[in-house]
Image 1 (cartoon, helix red, strand yellow):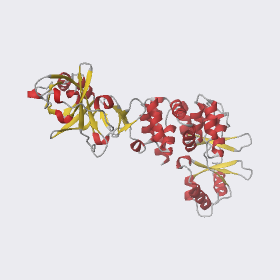
Image 2 (cartoon, rainbow, N blue to C red):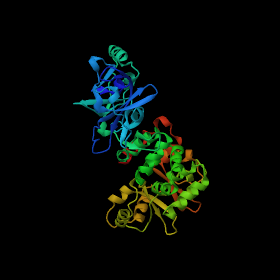
Image 3 (tube, rainbow, N blue to C red):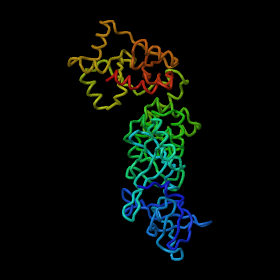
Image 4 (cartoon, helix red, strand yellow):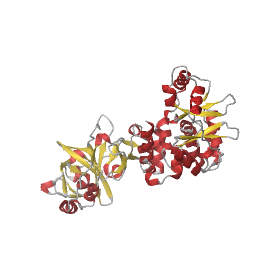
Length: 439
């Protein structure tokens, strides 16, 4: 096995011993049928004075001429060398691969390529993978042989971290160069939204935009919901308005409103809302945008399930199966009276275990008989801190928001208030706790 860092800088001499220059890059062919999982090196770039020679790999007779690590021998005299031209499908390992970021799927993070390792296959040299470890960086700057033995004496492990080439995706891009190693979007789509958001946060603005152009709409929407609103707004602004509208429409209305509120251009926000296919959802988002930041109205989601108190539990379950609401939004079912005002709240568990023929009105009467008929609500102008206090005091998963007449407007969920009041260092741990409590 050889490393690119060991080959770069080697002196090159021709078959009669005439110095040619130094190796400055290697090119591989990634396009089929020549590429494959471990593509071959096809060209050697040699810096010869002010010129750069592009020599076919077949001209290399010995990478370590006469046992010397710093000399590469050609099998032709300089006068008979054929100088190649750059071709479609060639990737330059130093120019296009080193220092680029790729996705480490095992750890759900972006990592930088510090070196490339290559395998000798007869006379052929193939790209076998990339080294993303700190040791790879030490190797590039010539410190590996000094630092690694010292670290061993100190009891510090300094392992190589190799990612096989067949797990690396090389593709054309307009961001940061003609060709660069990029995150494979099909693999990104399989990540948990929280992990995906963390990875996207590490990217440059151009890379973020490029990834969100390729992600499917549902994955893009769930990832945006997990990101900082300012970063999410920057991503939305980088997309064309039609795609942005599709993604916004897939998000929960309150999350979508939070992102759009951070956009710099009200005109662009309005244009995105106008392009949404569902005018009712667009109207919901516009309504949420009208509330003052830090209030229940701004925090609440309008994605709540409200039902008539006359429905039986069988009818409720049939309605849920037909409507297919987001399971995460089913903390509670909100029961309305004949005037469409909020009459009470029941849990999905109560509905599931109630005897056949039981109505929602029957369940509310049971609440009243057992003294559990007190309904905790807030108005849209209620401050977020008060919402958090009520949720904590009454051990609620969501808190209904009603207007002055008692009509249901939406609900503030526990994660909504945590986004506002929880310290950053432990906020990310809390959703797992609440997920266990609701499972």
